[in-house]
Image (cartoon, rainbow, N blue to C red; front, side):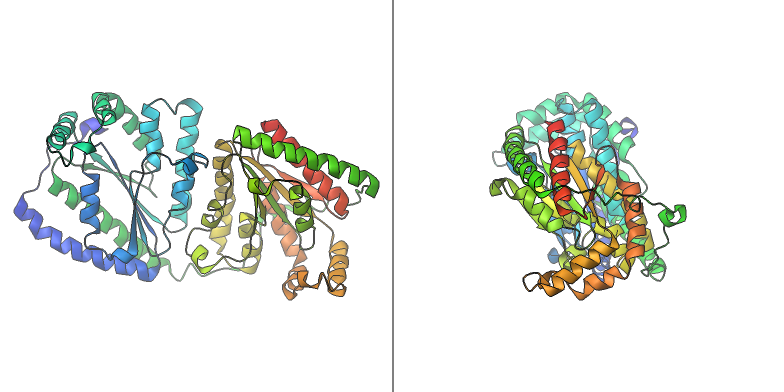
Length: 494
């Protein structure tokens, strides 16, 4: 692919002057429009060493309002980044709606530099490509404009630029041994670049190869592609504005299929208090030992709790954490998203809270709110919640590819038991804060929530992140089952 690119393309100075000013004005206008329409934009610059990425980025941002963009440079992993899935450091930098994020090198470093240095191959490489494609697809589906440039120069041109940089004391530092090594490996590098482009070029996130020998030609090409992509997105936004109104549709395939996953759960399971206390002590001691073991082996653990209101999530979580070292875990209660969280992809706020290697994070409610409360209450469109099943599965796959243990609990109680617990909370002063009018309102929609939960369980219980339904009419039984399930999952990983 790259070997067929014409690297002799040039643009004379007079022609450049004629078009660049007009393009700068156009880009400035488009920036204001994407801010008004709240369209997020991601621009990726990859390319050979000394191909001019920094220069082109500087020219691109010159006509932009500096309050509307961020530029991120991707270098070697920090100590914190090494302890997180490789996409984490990019997820947390994805732009708010109406802003532009420009990446000087990006998530593709993993398929280029790291691969060339033999750090990535085989199944790891395949899962990396899959993770990148699902990452970009999810962002594009959420409305992000994704523009990807690869700046191409010849081996001879790169070597000449290295020599020029080295000849000046103020720029010599920019060329290191690794750069020279990569120049010697130019042909091998070109093969993996070709494969990277082939694997990840998509309609929703296309690659543009920029002939970067001549700076003026490269600049105009970059401006042309960015302007065209933004214009098309704004036109698409205008044409679909009316069609994207939120729908409060709860007709699901699960209801059509009459799925009864939750209806057949045996909620009569119980355990007596004496046995409960003995087992609880045993399991909590083992969890404490496991916390130390996963820290030593740098295994991250993610525990997700979903279930009915008053199903006992809080009490269950307390029994898991009661004997743990507080420095090794974090509990994240999830409520309605903030204004900042709403300005990003809905998974952004969860990526910000995932555990680093060797630590435990417990979510009290999770990203599954997208296909439960947001779906039922009409807080997202039908298109949005329908595609979220795959987005969630892809995210959990990315986490487990990193080596994370993902344990998901659905705490199941019946309608009568929920009513009893609601009434108990209302009549007990120390518990009355736990019950709200929203809880009663949600109870009135029990059947709709049950249909949604059934579909969620059906579509998102995977081999790598399966659901465990916890029979929770008896809190003692529920707590022990959750602890034992968690222990088994982590011990299997260990």
